[in-house]
Image 1 (cartoon, rainbow, N blue to C red):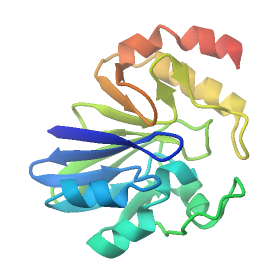
Image 2 (image 1 turned 30 degrees about the vertical axis):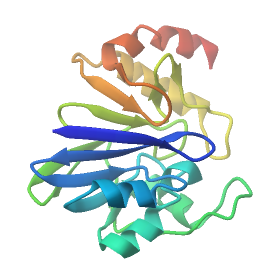
Image 3 (image 1 turned 120 degrees about the horizontal axis):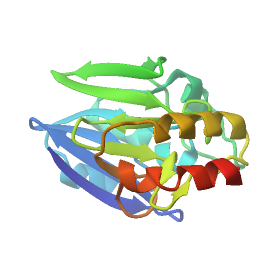
Image 4 (image 1 turned 120 degrees about the vertical axis):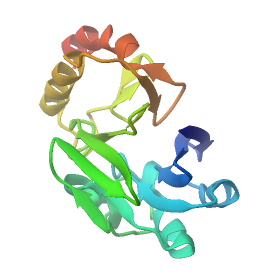
Length: 198
C-alpha cells in the first residue's frame, strides 16, 4: 500500500490517494484538489468520502466527470452532497454507492475496504479502513476530535462513537482529515478527556 496526501483549501483539508495493488482510491477531494489528484493517479478506482462537509467533497463532481469513477459515502451523509450547510455555494455531486452498516465492506476491483461508522460530527461520519491504516476524516485527529456544534452534529452520538473507539483492541496508523498523522492507541489515551469535555 502507498499513501500520499496534500492539504487543500482554506481549511487545509487532507486529500489522500491510497494505492493498493496498483489501484488508486481518492479520499476526501476538497477545495482545489482536482489538479493534484490528476497529477498523482494512474489507475483511479473510486472517490471515497469520510463525510459530506464541503471541505471534504468540493472536488467530487469534477473528478467524477474527468475520471468516470464512482463516489462512495455513508447513506446518512449522502444528502450533504446536494445541500449546502454553511452558506457556501458548493459544487453538487451525487453518491453512486452508499454504505449503511456500522461496519460496511465495499469491494472495488478486487480490493476490500471497510467503512466504520462513527457518527457525531455528522450523521454519517466514517473512518475508512484500508487494512494497513485508517483515514479518519473529522472523527479523530491528532490530539483532538471533530466538532459537534455544527448543523446535524450530535454530541451524544459522538460520545457513543468515542466509547466504541476506546474499546478497539488493535493499533494502526491514523490519517485524519486535518493535521498530522497519529495512531489509534495514541488517540485512545485522550478518549476519556473528550468524553468528559463534550
